[in-house]
Image 1 (cartoon, rainbow, N blue to C red):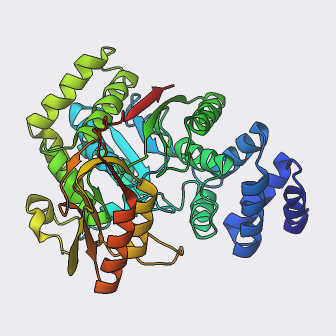
Image 2 (cartoon, rainbow, N blue to C red; image 1 turned 90 degrees about the vertical axis):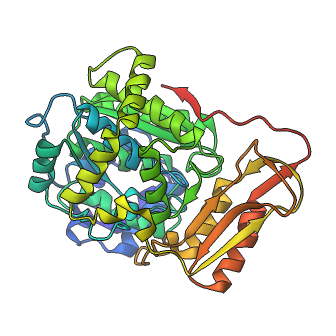
Length: 433
């Protein structure tokens, strides 16, 4: 068996055997298969797809390419949450401290940005001193001591996925349903949680542009979960426009901290309450969704959720003075307004165009080795349904050069569609599966 024959098989649209998939995953993990060979196979998968059996085999091969955690010694009711990716998606930073403050242990591993979607790890690393790459022993100990740990995906857990994840980003293979499903579920299986709630984003700023594709992905991940003895729930969310008002790493941390103090946009609030209430239900802490939502709001209003975030930042080496005084975060040297070309109502704000503009500013990566600039990004002041006046600032671009600022201003202006008639605000929660 050799990698060239495996590439040839998939290039011709043939199904790969379990043995061929395991040969590729093991060989690439060990460095016996090169990046360019792996890229060729990933592109062939992206173009020709996989059947459910192949996807399941790929998932399990990646999950067991390293250590598989057992979290039962921490608690039986751990609930993991994962998003398929979005623009301005800082939900993990807000939701997980809330859940931990209520008493549900949070052992959360996240990835870095992929394509136009931001990564939780990149956001956490914008907090000076915060260490995301702690070892598994310390990760579990932190959860036992303070009820929460937020880290990057360990090289010991699903290492094949970590390598393939970075390669997909650099080779325009981020939107493949088989690769998305196997990536997410391999991490979740390796991470050890028995209860998993998945935010399946859908729209212009997501890998799944249509509800139909989002449903396909959801059902596939639920199938994989069932076959691996995991309780998986999927919630489809609207990603036609950015989540909240900030896009960019330290900008999103600032928004997350404000949200934990009760200052959150309506779309963020709806996502937090919906996911949080179902997480509490999955953890066995209450079947009444509305009562669970009230409990979450009480946790925010009491300050306990904010305190838990401060606690995890401090535990993992972060400088909490930045959380206590948000003005300490370094600002981008160039901040330019995006002015509305006319009066009216925002009919559309393209998450895709805003996401692309943020990547070009340096908030995301165009190559896997690119460095992130945590200062840069975009603040949107007006979203779908909002009224605007002519020449009013509808967004602000945060850039590290005047040239990039000017280019981004034009791109963000093109992301807006403004009409004369009033527009209804879109729903955020689309479906619960």
